[in-house]
Length: 255
Image (cartoon, rainbow, N blue to C red):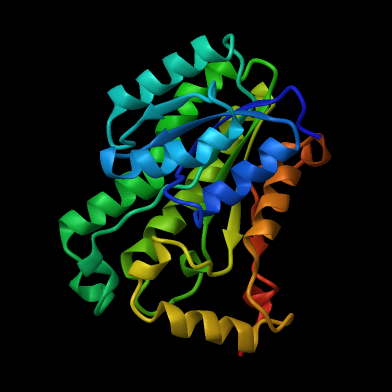
């Protein structure tokens, strides 16, 4: 389904990462992928994972708060993929731990800035550098969460940053549409990732979703991978600027 497509994945930290679930699905569907990692601490984990895709799988360092590093990644992508790119996955988010505890009112100016820089502006930075390589059109996918739409206790500034991310998706979809580049977001139900475990009360959140979602269960990483294939494939060529909920229907509930 994705044979001949070339993509770059931002946000793999370990085997539980949502980015890894989507990357595996893309790979199995025939895409050739490159990966990035943020910091030496995570490098070894990512190297071990992407090694399963072959020794020639490109892996680049990238701190998404650095325009210089972002440009460097796409210079390498251009060389490694013969100046052709079709897919980009943005699964990057961060807020200081103290901002994900207590109340939103206590969010510091610095925590607010960092959360928006890493979690929202980075999509703009990546898309700007990716677009010139997407000469045959492309699909850019960002990961978001329902806390952007409704208050989720303790999600705090990350919810506000995800709202910014979703608006960024829409504005990028408008700008890049004439180039046949689609920009969408997947709003995933809670998944037991490294980042999610940093949110106070996350275990209770999983139980709450299971009890209240129409399907009476939590999502599986495999389902995010399959949605990622759909949005990357020619089955979704008329879909852009969308936030697609993959949460067993939780978002439709009022009570």
